[in-house]
Image 1: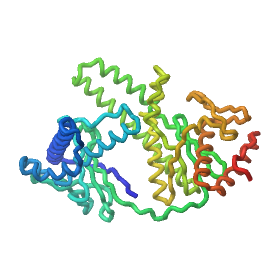
Image 2: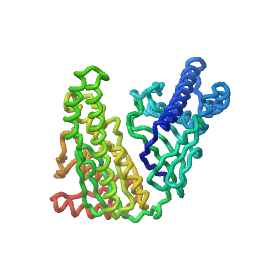
Image 3: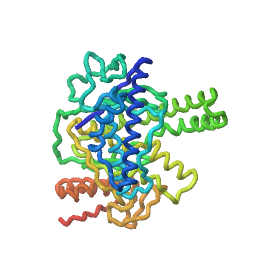
Image 4: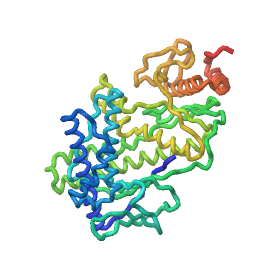
Length: 416
């Protein structure tokens, strides 16, 4: 597996000038390569491949010597980023996302992320150094982490606010990581339904549930941010008063995002450490589609979209869960969760369940929280699809005992 760590750096003014020079040349390379792809498609109706553009780099350096100031791997990384953006665009369109748009040109005020792939960097004596030929100013930054003995695959230099690089400076280091304990199926499983109100509703093989509410720091910060935005919008743009409000807005938004991220890190770590199950099953979320409800309007739609797209970060939480599990020899498996919230886990009858309806009441007598019902269905679907009859029997027996306590008879779809 590969892990990525983000480290804050503090470049000097001379080093910032070097970074901007490299960024501008990378940005121009990106724009020229994008223009070539667009023009080739209009004139010849064919796509330009990455290798074709990469092979033109030596010729471009001869024609425009200033590009030789940038390390060769950095320019190759620029072309790979453009190629990846196009592949992502075509994949989204192929999957039916009509809102997907092709890559656009980058403006002169945009700080382009500088990527060093495989070579051109060095970690030694608590410093990270990067190659360049802009001038004699060394790109060497003090860091507080040890990377010398790790198999580093890629290093990126970026700014947290790409527009005019007004944010903090960071490097992200991607390296190979070998888990100390290899994964093995111990016959214990945990199924998770990720949601908006409750970020996690989980059930394990013993039929026990675990729930965690979604942290909503946005409910505190959004009121303050919206107030400042209203005051800022009444000022002349880029005036001193406008800039002061804008700076405070960005600080609040960063605090909000950091609090949410910190909560998800702690929750995912707690869940991995406190479960005996080596296999964790989660529903394969389609977060982008969750914002496309045409029936909802006004405040309800705005609140839902903020929860799923801006504040929820459901996909990111699953990512945290995945890599933390793999580090300790566990595994996260995604399965299709279609209709798991609408289908009664007892009699399998499918109901209409609008989002505001949080409890399922079925004709068979089953009354249960919709998220718990979904978690049970995810567990059953995984066990049945993988023909894990022993695990299913164990789960069904434990769940039957839970159902009897609730006055519900659990119907077993597998004949004994």
